[in-house]
Amino acid sequence: MPLPVVLINPSSASGSTAEAWPRIASGLRSEFGAFQTLFTKVRGDAASLATDAARAGTKLIIACGGDGTISEVANGILSSGKDVELGILPSGTGGDFRRSLEIPSQSRAAARILREGRPRRIDVGRISFVDHNGAEPMRYFVGVASCGMSTKVIERVKAGGADWLPANTPRWLGGRISFGASLLQTALRTAPTRLVVQFDDAHERHLSVVNLCVANARYFGGGMKIAPEAKLTDGKFDVVVVGDLGAMRIFTSAPRVYFGSHLSMPEVSHTRARKVMVRSADKRHEVDLEVDGELPGRLPATFQIIPAALRVRCPHAAPP
Image (cartoon, rainbow, N blue to C red):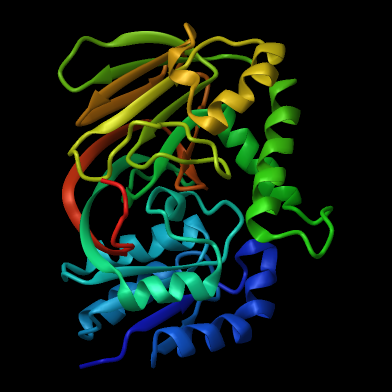
């Protein structure tokens, strides 16, 4: 039987994964055992490498990187048609999906979960949208997809990263600071987005939003608990709509989003649905889309939940 494969994105965590890999590999070898390694070179590599490894008979494929890398590996596994287990070795800026699974950010602790954890079947989201070339692809996501202010925050984070932080800043804290600072900067320049939204077979609704999140998992944006009631095994999305807030209200409400207490705000609505359709209310206005921390394209988009589609190596006490 082939050894487990570790797919490493050396560019994750603003490029620090490449430098940290020898230390990460040593801890993984000590805590977990033997494995094969494959390094990504360009965006999309992790998905194609995961597909090839799955079809070659690999039973466990471990994503070493951030949320984007994990999402790519999950897409590769799902596209392969093989029942292959996903493992997570965190080394990225946001770390949102591993938070939902209660996988620690420290590589040695995560390696112990890879050795001692158990497989769980989780739901995934499937989305069709318009990419940057005008095509209409389909892909999967494991965490959160969103539109509105979040796309501009992601753009800022990717443009500046956390390069301005001290070199000894822990990765998990650097991610939170980078996302938090970008959120505050973006709030000053953000106008509401007008959308047309349909949940399952209900009537279309016209909404003016600061942000709309279609959540399979609980966290996005570097630790924001945007969907505190989301469950990875309930066969439904948690759709969180943040209405027309001004910049000052965004500033004062930001801590509530990190702690997950924002659902009681009058400007926030929360709906569960198996299918969500979203488009811009103004055909002349393009609305960008964020999926698992990446920016693959724009609306219109259709989101569908795929129950129990993916096996993931989890801690024994992982949440439902």
